[in-house]
Image 1 (tube, rainbow over the protein chains, first blue to last red):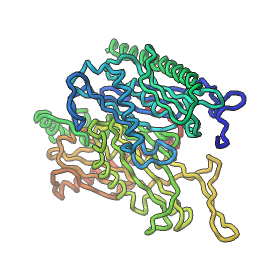
Image 2: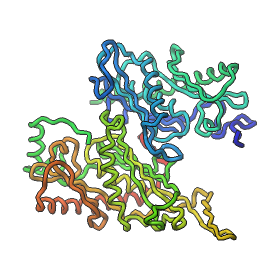
Image 3: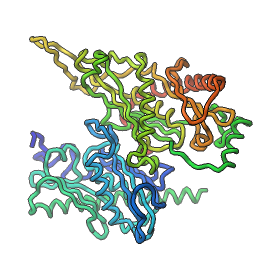
Image 4: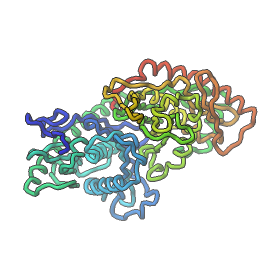
Length: 246
Length: 289
Protein backbone atom coordinates (compact mmCIF):
# COMPACT_ATOMS: atom_id res chain seq x y z
CA UNK A 1 0.00 0.00 0.00
CA UNK A 2 1.92 2.96 -1.37
CA UNK A 3 4.98 2.01 0.62
CA UNK A 4 3.52 3.21 3.91
CA UNK A 5 3.51 0.69 6.68
CA UNK A 6 0.27 1.43 8.52
CA UNK A 7 0.95 -1.12 11.19
CA UNK A 8 4.51 -1.92 12.21
CA UNK A 9 5.66 -5.40 13.11
CA UNK A 10 5.65 -4.37 16.74
CA UNK A 11 1.98 -3.48 16.41
CA UNK A 12 2.20 0.30 16.39
CA UNK A 13 0.48 2.65 13.98
CA UNK A 14 2.04 5.57 12.12
CA UNK A 15 1.26 8.03 14.91
CA UNK A 16 2.46 5.65 17.61
CA UNK A 17 -0.96 4.41 18.71
CA UNK A 18 -1.88 0.81 19.31
CA UNK A 19 -4.61 -0.58 17.00
CA UNK A 20 -7.40 -0.14 19.53
CA UNK A 21 -6.36 3.26 20.80
CA UNK A 22 -8.35 6.47 20.20
CA UNK A 23 -6.62 9.75 19.51
CA UNK A 24 -6.39 12.33 22.27
CA UNK A 25 -9.78 13.90 22.80
CA UNK A 26 -10.19 17.41 24.12
CA UNK A 27 -13.53 19.09 24.24
CA UNK A 28 -15.45 22.03 25.60
CA UNK A 29 -19.13 22.82 25.93
CA UNK A 30 -20.62 26.27 25.56
CA UNK A 31 -18.02 28.05 23.43
CA UNK A 32 -20.41 30.68 22.06
CA UNK A 33 -22.79 32.96 23.91
CA UNK A 34 -25.14 33.77 21.06
CA UNK A 35 -26.14 30.25 20.11
CA UNK A 36 -28.52 28.10 22.16
CA UNK A 37 -25.91 25.40 22.40
CA UNK A 38 -22.36 24.99 21.20
CA UNK A 39 -19.42 22.68 21.60
CA UNK A 40 -15.90 22.24 20.36
CA UNK A 41 -14.04 18.99 20.04
CA UNK A 42 -10.53 17.97 19.10
CA UNK A 43 -9.83 14.37 18.20
CA UNK A 44 -6.13 14.36 17.55
CA UNK A 45 -5.67 17.00 14.90
CA UNK A 46 -9.28 16.92 13.73
CA UNK A 47 -11.07 19.94 15.13
CA UNK A 48 -14.80 20.51 14.89
CA UNK A 49 -17.13 23.17 16.12
CA UNK A 50 -20.88 22.68 16.46
CA UNK A 51 -23.67 25.10 17.24
CA UNK A 52 -27.34 24.46 17.79
CA UNK A 53 -30.12 27.00 17.36
CA UNK A 54 -33.63 26.16 18.37
CA UNK A 55 -36.16 24.81 18.75
CA UNK A 56 -37.63 27.85 17.00
CA UNK A 57 -40.31 28.59 14.41
CA UNK A 58 -39.74 27.15 10.95
CA UNK A 59 -37.59 29.59 9.01
CA UNK A 60 -36.31 29.84 5.48
CA UNK A 61 -37.10 27.46 2.67
CA UNK A 62 -37.04 24.39 4.86
CA UNK A 63 -40.48 23.29 3.79
CA UNK A 64 -43.64 23.21 5.78
CA UNK A 65 -43.70 22.72 9.52
CA UNK A 66 -44.47 19.13 10.42
CA UNK A 67 -47.51 18.66 12.63
CA UNK A 68 -46.12 15.72 14.58
CA UNK A 69 -42.41 16.37 14.91
CA UNK A 70 -39.63 18.89 14.71
CA UNK A 71 -37.69 19.61 11.51
CA UNK A 72 -33.99 19.02 11.95
CA UNK A 73 -31.85 21.16 9.71
CA UNK A 74 -28.17 20.29 9.48
CA UNK A 75 -25.33 21.97 7.72
CA UNK A 76 -21.85 20.57 7.46
CA UNK A 77 -19.10 22.86 6.32
CA UNK A 78 -15.35 22.76 6.23
CA UNK A 79 -13.19 25.83 6.64
CA UNK A 80 -11.34 26.43 3.37
CA UNK A 81 -8.01 26.07 5.16
CA UNK A 82 -8.95 22.92 7.03
CA UNK A 83 -7.54 20.43 4.54
CA UNK A 84 -3.97 20.07 3.33
CA UNK A 85 -4.99 21.22 -0.14
CA UNK A 86 -6.94 24.43 0.14
CA UNK A 87 -10.65 24.06 -0.64
CA UNK A 88 -12.45 26.58 -2.80
CA UNK A 89 -15.77 26.52 -1.01
CA UNK A 90 -16.63 25.82 2.60
CA UNK A 91 -19.89 24.05 1.76
CA UNK A 92 -22.31 23.36 -1.05
CA UNK A 93 -20.19 20.71 -2.75
CA UNK A 94 -21.42 17.15 -3.03
CA UNK A 95 -19.44 15.79 -0.15
CA UNK A 96 -20.69 18.39 2.32
CA UNK A 97 -24.25 17.95 1.12
CA UNK A 98 -23.95 14.21 1.70
CA UNK A 99 -22.46 14.80 5.13
CA UNK A 100 -25.28 17.21 6.03
CA UNK A 101 -27.79 14.57 5.06
CA UNK A 102 -26.04 11.89 7.10
CA UNK A 103 -25.98 14.19 10.11
CA UNK A 104 -29.66 14.91 9.68
CA UNK A 105 -30.51 11.20 9.57
CA UNK A 106 -28.37 10.50 12.62
CA UNK A 107 -29.99 13.17 14.72
CA UNK A 108 -33.51 12.46 13.55
CA UNK A 109 -32.93 9.03 15.02
CA UNK A 110 -31.82 10.36 18.40
CA UNK A 111 -33.50 13.65 19.22
CA UNK A 112 -36.92 13.30 20.79
CA UNK A 113 -38.50 14.85 17.73
CA UNK A 114 -42.11 14.37 18.85
CA UNK A 115 -41.66 16.88 21.69
CA UNK A 116 -41.48 19.93 19.44
CA UNK A 117 -44.08 19.69 16.70
CA UNK A 118 -44.24 22.56 14.17
CA UNK A 119 -40.72 23.75 15.06
CA UNK A 120 -37.20 23.55 13.74
CA UNK A 121 -33.81 22.79 15.23
CA UNK A 122 -30.69 23.93 13.39
CA UNK A 123 -27.46 22.02 13.84
CA UNK A 124 -24.43 23.59 12.21
CA UNK A 125 -21.06 21.93 12.30
CA UNK A 126 -17.82 23.25 10.98
CA UNK A 127 -14.55 21.43 10.55
CA UNK A 128 -11.69 23.77 11.38
CA UNK A 129 -8.95 21.25 10.78
CA UNK A 130 -9.40 17.94 8.99
CA UNK A 131 -7.27 14.96 9.88
CA UNK A 132 -9.51 11.97 9.34
CA UNK A 133 -12.71 10.98 11.08
CA UNK A 134 -14.40 14.27 10.21
CA UNK A 135 -17.86 12.81 10.35
CA UNK A 136 -17.20 11.27 13.75
CA UNK A 137 -15.90 14.52 15.19
CA UNK A 138 -18.97 16.31 13.82
CA UNK A 139 -21.43 13.88 15.35
CA UNK A 140 -19.67 13.99 18.71
CA UNK A 141 -19.50 17.79 18.67
CA UNK A 142 -23.13 18.08 17.61
CA UNK A 143 -24.23 15.72 20.39
CA UNK A 144 -22.44 17.87 22.95
CA UNK A 145 -23.94 21.04 21.46
CA UNK A 146 -27.44 19.56 21.64
CA UNK A 147 -26.86 18.62 25.27
CA UNK A 148 -25.58 22.14 25.86
CA UNK A 149 -28.77 23.51 24.29
CA UNK A 150 -30.86 21.32 26.61
CA UNK A 151 -32.69 19.48 23.87
CA UNK A 152 -33.89 16.03 25.01
CA UNK A 153 -32.36 13.03 23.26
CA UNK A 154 -32.91 9.32 23.64
CA UNK A 155 -29.23 8.87 24.40
CA UNK A 156 -25.87 10.32 23.45
CA UNK A 157 -24.84 9.64 19.86
CA UNK A 158 -21.18 8.79 19.67
CA UNK A 159 -19.39 8.12 16.45
CA UNK A 160 -16.18 6.32 15.73
CA UNK A 161 -14.49 5.00 12.63
CA UNK A 162 -12.45 1.88 12.18
CA UNK A 163 -10.25 0.44 9.48
CA UNK A 164 -8.73 -2.91 8.68
CA UNK A 165 -5.04 -3.42 8.00
CA UNK A 166 -3.00 -6.65 8.03
CA UNK A 167 -5.83 -8.65 9.58
CA UNK A 168 -6.01 -6.14 12.41
CA UNK A 169 -8.89 -3.74 12.93
CA UNK A 170 -7.82 -0.16 13.73
CA UNK A 171 -9.90 2.31 15.76
CA UNK A 172 -10.33 6.00 15.00
CA UNK A 173 -8.44 6.17 11.71
CA UNK A 174 -6.45 9.28 10.90
CA UNK A 175 -6.27 10.99 7.52
CA UNK A 176 -3.08 9.19 6.60
CA UNK A 177 -4.68 5.82 7.30
CA UNK A 178 -7.95 6.82 5.63
CA UNK A 179 -6.23 7.92 2.45
CA UNK A 180 -4.34 4.68 1.81
CA UNK A 181 -7.36 3.09 0.22
CA UNK A 182 -8.17 0.53 2.88
CA UNK A 183 -11.69 -0.03 4.17
CA UNK A 184 -13.11 2.56 6.58
CA UNK A 185 -16.24 1.86 8.56
CA UNK A 186 -17.99 4.76 10.27
CA UNK A 187 -20.51 4.00 12.97
CA UNK A 188 -22.70 6.38 14.96
CA UNK A 189 -24.13 4.62 17.94
CA UNK A 190 -26.42 5.12 20.91
CA UNK A 191 -24.05 3.58 23.43
CA UNK A 192 -26.54 2.47 26.09
CA UNK A 193 -28.96 0.60 23.87
CA UNK A 194 -26.18 -0.26 21.40
CA UNK A 195 -28.38 0.86 18.54
CA UNK A 196 -26.66 2.03 15.42
CA UNK A 197 -27.93 5.35 14.06
CA UNK A 198 -25.57 5.49 11.11
CA UNK A 199 -23.40 2.94 9.41
CA UNK A 200 -21.22 3.75 6.47
CA UNK A 201 -18.44 1.87 4.77
CA UNK A 202 -15.95 3.02 2.18
CA UNK A 203 -13.94 0.61 0.03
CA UNK A 204 -13.98 -3.15 0.09
CA UNK A 205 -14.00 -5.39 3.12
CA UNK A 206 -14.65 -9.11 3.28
CA UNK A 207 -17.86 -9.89 5.08
CA UNK A 208 -16.04 -12.29 7.38
CA UNK A 209 -14.05 -9.42 8.81
CA UNK A 210 -17.00 -7.11 9.21
CA UNK A 211 -17.91 -8.39 12.64
CA UNK A 212 -14.44 -7.72 14.02
CA UNK A 213 -14.33 -4.24 12.52
CA UNK A 214 -17.78 -3.38 13.80
CA UNK A 215 -16.84 -4.68 17.22
CA UNK A 216 -13.86 -2.35 17.32
CA UNK A 217 -15.90 0.60 16.09
CA UNK A 218 -18.58 0.07 18.70
CA UNK A 219 -15.93 -0.24 21.40
CA UNK A 220 -14.57 3.09 20.13
CA UNK A 221 -18.04 4.63 20.39
CA UNK A 222 -18.35 3.46 23.98
CA UNK A 223 -14.93 4.85 24.87
CA UNK A 224 -15.97 8.09 23.24
CA UNK A 225 -19.14 8.04 25.34
CA UNK A 226 -17.15 7.71 28.54
CA UNK A 227 -15.07 10.77 27.67
CA UNK A 228 -18.06 12.82 26.56
CA UNK A 229 -20.16 11.89 29.54
CA UNK A 230 -17.37 12.83 31.94
CA UNK A 231 -17.00 16.20 30.20
CA UNK A 232 -20.74 16.88 30.31
CA UNK A 233 -20.89 16.01 34.00
CA UNK A 234 -17.96 18.27 34.74
CA UNK A 235 -19.52 21.09 32.74
CA UNK A 236 -22.84 20.74 34.53
CA UNK A 237 -21.27 20.66 37.97
CA UNK A 238 -19.25 23.75 37.12
CA UNK A 239 -22.43 25.50 35.99
CA UNK A 240 -24.20 24.46 39.18
CA UNK A 241 -21.35 25.80 41.27
CA UNK A 242 -21.32 29.15 39.52
CA UNK A 243 -25.06 29.40 40.09
CA UNK A 244 -24.61 28.70 43.78
CA UNK A 245 -22.02 31.44 44.07
CA UNK A 246 -24.26 34.03 42.52
CA UNK B 1 -24.42 42.26 9.56
CA UNK B 2 -26.44 40.01 11.74
CA UNK B 3 -28.92 42.63 12.79
CA UNK B 4 -31.07 42.69 15.84
CA UNK B 5 -34.35 44.41 16.44
CA UNK B 6 -34.53 47.32 18.83
CA UNK B 7 -37.54 49.27 20.05
CA UNK B 8 -37.75 53.05 19.61
CA UNK B 9 -37.18 53.58 23.33
CA UNK B 10 -34.04 51.49 23.36
CA UNK B 11 -32.70 53.37 20.37
CA UNK B 12 -33.40 56.74 21.97
CA UNK B 13 -31.64 55.62 25.11
CA UNK B 14 -28.51 54.63 23.21
CA UNK B 15 -28.51 57.75 21.01
CA UNK B 16 -29.00 60.12 23.95
CA UNK B 17 -26.24 58.50 25.92
CA UNK B 18 -23.81 58.90 23.04
CA UNK B 19 -24.76 62.44 21.98
CA UNK B 20 -25.24 64.01 25.40
CA UNK B 21 -23.14 62.19 27.95
CA UNK B 22 -20.37 60.52 25.93
CA UNK B 23 -21.47 57.32 27.62
CA UNK B 24 -22.50 54.03 26.09
CA UNK B 25 -24.64 51.24 27.49
CA UNK B 26 -21.59 49.14 28.35
CA UNK B 27 -19.95 52.02 30.21
CA UNK B 28 -17.48 53.00 27.52
CA UNK B 29 -16.92 56.50 26.16
CA UNK B 30 -17.56 57.16 22.48
CA UNK B 31 -13.97 56.61 21.40
CA UNK B 32 -12.95 53.68 23.54
CA UNK B 33 -12.37 50.19 22.23
CA UNK B 34 -13.39 46.94 23.87
CA UNK B 35 -10.73 44.53 25.06
CA UNK B 36 -9.94 41.78 22.65
CA UNK B 37 -8.47 38.35 22.95
CA UNK B 38 -5.99 37.31 20.27
CA UNK B 39 -4.23 34.03 19.71
CA UNK B 40 -1.83 33.03 16.95
CA UNK B 41 -1.11 29.58 15.53
CA UNK B 42 -4.48 27.99 16.22
CA UNK B 43 -4.76 25.76 13.15
CA UNK B 44 -1.64 23.68 12.72
CA UNK B 45 -2.05 22.74 9.06
CA UNK B 46 -2.00 26.33 7.84
CA UNK B 47 1.06 28.49 7.17
CA UNK B 48 -0.24 30.96 9.72
CA UNK B 49 -3.42 31.49 11.67
CA UNK B 50 -5.01 33.70 14.28
CA UNK B 51 -8.18 33.76 16.29
CA UNK B 52 -9.60 37.02 17.55
CA UNK B 53 -12.44 37.49 19.98
CA UNK B 54 -13.78 40.96 20.45
CA UNK B 55 -16.56 40.59 22.99
CA UNK B 56 -19.19 38.64 21.05
CA UNK B 57 -17.45 38.87 17.70
CA UNK B 58 -15.18 35.98 16.91
CA UNK B 59 -13.16 35.39 13.76
CA UNK B 60 -10.63 32.79 12.74
CA UNK B 61 -8.13 33.49 9.98
CA UNK B 62 -6.00 30.85 8.29
CA UNK B 63 -3.33 31.74 5.77
CA UNK B 64 -2.10 29.15 3.33
CA UNK B 65 0.86 29.88 1.08
CA UNK B 66 0.62 28.10 -2.26
CA UNK B 67 2.96 28.16 -5.19
CA UNK B 68 1.51 28.82 -8.59
CA UNK B 69 1.79 30.82 -11.78
CA UNK B 70 1.77 34.61 -11.30
CA UNK B 71 -0.71 37.15 -12.51
CA UNK B 72 0.37 37.90 -16.11
CA UNK B 73 0.17 41.64 -15.43
CA UNK B 74 2.64 41.37 -12.54
CA UNK B 75 4.87 38.42 -13.43
CA UNK B 76 7.47 39.08 -10.77
CA UNK B 77 5.18 39.58 -7.81
CA UNK B 78 3.34 37.26 -5.50
CA UNK B 79 -0.11 38.07 -4.27
CA UNK B 80 -2.68 37.73 -1.56
CA UNK B 81 -6.28 36.64 -1.89
CA UNK B 82 -9.05 36.95 0.62
CA UNK B 83 -12.00 34.71 1.15
CA UNK B 84 -14.60 35.38 3.82
CA UNK B 85 -16.86 32.61 5.01
CA UNK B 86 -19.82 33.58 7.15
CA UNK B 87 -20.23 30.41 9.10
CA UNK B 88 -23.76 29.36 9.94
CA UNK B 89 -22.42 29.09 13.48
CA UNK B 90 -22.66 32.88 13.69
CA UNK B 91 -26.32 33.07 12.78
CA UNK B 92 -28.81 30.72 11.11
CA UNK B 93 -29.24 33.50 8.54
CA UNK B 94 -25.88 32.65 7.07
CA UNK B 95 -26.80 29.03 6.39
CA UNK B 96 -26.50 27.98 2.77
CA UNK B 97 -25.56 31.01 0.71
CA UNK B 98 -26.97 33.50 3.18
CA UNK B 99 -23.69 35.23 3.96
CA UNK B 100 -22.28 35.38 0.44
CA UNK B 101 -23.09 39.00 -0.36
CA UNK B 102 -21.65 40.36 2.86
CA UNK B 103 -18.64 38.11 2.44
CA UNK B 104 -17.96 39.43 -1.05
CA UNK B 105 -18.19 43.00 0.21
CA UNK B 106 -15.67 42.39 2.97
CA UNK B 107 -13.21 40.41 0.86
CA UNK B 108 -13.30 43.13 -1.81
CA UNK B 109 -12.61 45.79 0.78
CA UNK B 110 -9.61 43.86 2.10
CA UNK B 111 -8.40 43.12 -1.43
CA UNK B 112 -8.54 46.80 -2.27
CA UNK B 113 -6.49 47.80 0.75
CA UNK B 114 -3.90 45.06 0.26
CA UNK B 115 -3.50 45.76 -3.47
CA UNK B 116 -1.18 48.64 -2.63
CA UNK B 117 2.41 47.66 -3.42
CA UNK B 118 3.69 49.08 -0.16
CA UNK B 119 1.62 46.82 2.07
CA UNK B 120 3.63 43.64 1.80
CA UNK B 121 6.89 42.89 0.05
CA UNK B 122 5.20 41.14 -2.86
CA UNK B 123 8.49 40.97 -4.75
CA UNK B 124 9.94 38.66 -2.11
CA UNK B 125 7.07 36.25 -2.77
CA UNK B 126 8.33 35.69 -6.29
CA UNK B 127 10.18 32.42 -6.82
CA UNK B 128 10.89 32.47 -10.58
CA UNK B 129 9.70 35.61 -12.36
CA UNK B 130 6.96 34.83 -14.83
CA UNK B 131 6.69 31.21 -13.80
CA UNK B 132 6.20 30.64 -10.16
CA UNK B 133 5.20 32.84 -7.24
CA UNK B 134 3.75 32.40 -3.78
CA UNK B 135 0.11 33.30 -3.40
CA UNK B 136 -1.15 33.80 0.11
CA UNK B 137 -4.71 32.66 0.61
CA UNK B 138 -6.12 34.39 3.65
CA UNK B 139 -9.34 32.61 4.55
CA UNK B 140 -11.50 34.23 7.17
CA UNK B 141 -14.18 32.33 9.05
CA UNK B 142 -16.68 34.45 10.95
CA UNK B 143 -17.72 32.34 13.91
CA UNK B 144 -19.67 34.85 15.94
CA UNK B 145 -21.10 38.18 14.98
CA UNK B 146 -21.37 40.77 17.73
CA UNK B 147 -20.71 44.07 15.99
CA UNK B 148 -17.62 45.73 14.54
CA UNK B 149 -16.81 42.77 12.37
CA UNK B 150 -14.56 44.54 9.87
CA UNK B 151 -12.14 45.83 12.49
CA UNK B 152 -11.94 42.39 14.04
CA UNK B 153 -11.26 40.77 10.68
CA UNK B 154 -8.52 43.23 9.76
CA UNK B 155 -6.77 42.79 13.11
CA UNK B 156 -6.93 39.01 12.82
CA UNK B 157 -5.66 39.09 9.22
CA UNK B 158 -2.67 41.18 10.24
CA UNK B 159 -1.93 38.81 13.12
CA UNK B 160 -2.27 35.73 10.92
CA UNK B 161 0.08 37.21 8.33
CA UNK B 162 2.61 37.96 11.06
CA UNK B 163 2.27 34.34 12.13
CA UNK B 164 2.73 33.03 8.57
CA UNK B 165 5.79 30.93 7.83
CA UNK B 166 6.65 30.38 4.19
CA UNK B 167 8.96 27.46 3.44
CA UNK B 168 12.38 28.45 2.21
CA UNK B 169 12.88 27.70 -1.47
CA UNK B 170 16.03 27.88 -3.51
CA UNK B 171 16.23 28.01 -7.28
CA UNK B 172 19.16 26.41 -9.04
CA UNK B 173 19.88 26.12 -12.71
CA UNK B 174 20.35 22.79 -14.41
CA UNK B 175 23.01 22.10 -17.01
CA UNK B 176 20.56 22.74 -19.82
CA UNK B 177 19.45 26.07 -18.35
CA UNK B 178 16.11 24.99 -16.88
CA UNK B 179 15.43 26.27 -13.41
CA UNK B 180 14.64 23.88 -10.61
CA UNK B 181 12.85 24.74 -7.41
CA UNK B 182 14.11 23.15 -4.26
CA UNK B 183 11.90 23.36 -1.19
CA UNK B 184 13.83 22.99 2.01
CA UNK B 185 12.95 19.79 3.81
CA UNK B 186 13.82 21.26 7.18
CA UNK B 187 10.62 22.67 8.73
CA UNK B 188 12.71 25.21 10.64
CA UNK B 189 13.86 26.85 7.41
CA UNK B 190 11.21 29.41 6.71
CA UNK B 191 10.74 33.07 5.92
CA UNK B 192 8.29 35.34 7.63
CA UNK B 193 6.45 38.34 6.26
CA UNK B 194 7.12 41.92 7.15
CA UNK B 195 3.79 43.16 8.45
CA UNK B 196 4.87 46.53 9.83
CA UNK B 197 3.18 48.51 7.06
CA UNK B 198 -0.09 46.63 7.21
CA UNK B 199 -3.03 48.78 8.23
CA UNK B 200 -5.91 47.94 10.52
CA UNK B 201 -9.45 48.90 9.65
CA UNK B 202 -11.24 51.31 11.91
CA UNK B 203 -14.98 51.63 11.58
CA UNK B 204 -16.37 54.92 12.82
CA UNK B 205 -20.12 54.76 13.21
CA UNK B 206 -22.38 57.79 13.37
CA UNK B 207 -25.07 57.58 15.99
CA UNK B 208 -27.33 60.61 16.16
CA UNK B 209 -25.05 63.62 15.93
CA UNK B 210 -22.06 61.91 17.49
CA UNK B 211 -19.76 59.18 16.34
CA UNK B 212 -18.34 56.11 18.02
CA UNK B 213 -15.75 53.43 17.37
CA UNK B 214 -16.08 49.70 17.98
CA UNK B 215 -19.87 49.67 17.86
CA UNK B 216 -21.84 46.80 19.34
CA UNK B 217 -24.72 45.19 17.46
CA UNK B 218 -27.21 47.39 19.32
CA UNK B 219 -25.34 50.53 18.39
CA UNK B 220 -25.04 49.43 14.77
CA UNK B 221 -28.82 49.09 14.74
CA UNK B 222 -29.12 52.77 15.76
CA UNK B 223 -26.82 54.02 13.05
CA UNK B 224 -27.49 54.98 9.46
CA UNK B 225 -23.96 55.37 8.17
CA UNK B 226 -20.37 54.58 8.99
CA UNK B 227 -16.99 55.02 7.44
CA UNK B 228 -14.32 52.36 7.38
CA UNK B 229 -10.77 53.64 7.18
CA UNK B 230 -7.60 51.60 6.77
CA UNK B 231 -5.07 53.23 9.08
CA UNK B 232 -1.41 52.25 9.31
CA UNK B 233 0.94 52.66 12.22
CA UNK B 234 1.87 56.22 11.34
CA UNK B 235 -1.76 57.22 11.25
CA UNK B 236 -1.86 57.54 7.47
CA UNK B 237 -4.99 56.41 5.70
CA UNK B 238 -4.58 53.67 3.11
CA UNK B 239 -8.16 53.35 2.04
CA UNK B 240 -11.61 54.44 2.99
CA UNK B 241 -15.18 53.41 2.36
CA UNK B 242 -18.49 54.79 3.49
CA UNK B 243 -21.12 52.25 4.27
CA UNK B 244 -24.73 52.33 5.27
CA UNK B 245 -27.86 53.92 3.90
CA UNK B 246 -27.52 57.37 5.48
CA UNK B 247 -25.54 60.32 4.18
CA UNK B 248 -22.73 62.28 5.80
CA UNK B 249 -21.52 65.86 5.49
CA UNK B 250 -17.92 66.60 4.53
CA UNK B 251 -17.44 68.19 7.93
CA UNK B 252 -18.52 65.10 9.81
CA UNK B 253 -16.35 62.89 7.62
CA UNK B 254 -13.31 64.98 8.60
CA UNK B 255 -14.17 64.66 12.25
CA UNK B 256 -14.66 60.93 11.94
CA UNK B 257 -11.39 60.52 10.10
CA UNK B 258 -9.51 62.39 12.82
CA UNK B 259 -10.89 59.94 15.36
CA UNK B 260 -10.16 56.98 13.08
CA UNK B 261 -6.52 58.07 12.68
CA UNK B 262 -5.93 58.28 16.40
CA UNK B 263 -7.68 55.01 17.18
CA UNK B 264 -5.92 53.27 14.29
CA UNK B 265 -2.52 54.40 15.51
CA UNK B 266 -3.22 53.12 19.02
CA UNK B 267 -4.64 49.84 17.73
CA UNK B 268 -1.64 49.23 15.51
CA UNK B 269 0.68 49.94 18.38
CA UNK B 270 -0.99 47.54 20.78
CA UNK B 271 -1.29 44.88 18.08
CA UNK B 272 2.38 45.21 17.11
CA UNK B 273 3.41 45.00 20.76
CA UNK B 274 1.40 41.83 21.18
CA UNK B 275 2.66 40.27 17.97
CA UNK B 276 6.30 40.88 18.80
CA UNK B 277 5.74 38.90 21.99
CA UNK B 278 3.25 36.20 21.06
CA UNK B 279 2.84 36.47 17.29
CA UNK B 280 5.12 33.55 16.44
CA UNK B 281 3.30 31.01 18.60
CA UNK B 282 2.58 27.86 16.70
CA UNK B 283 0.58 25.82 19.14
CA UNK B 284 -2.06 27.51 21.19
CA UNK B 285 -5.05 26.23 23.04
CA UNK B 286 -7.64 27.73 20.73
CA UNK B 287 -11.22 27.16 21.75
CA UNK B 288 -10.39 25.06 24.76
CA UNK B 289 -9.68 28.00 27.03
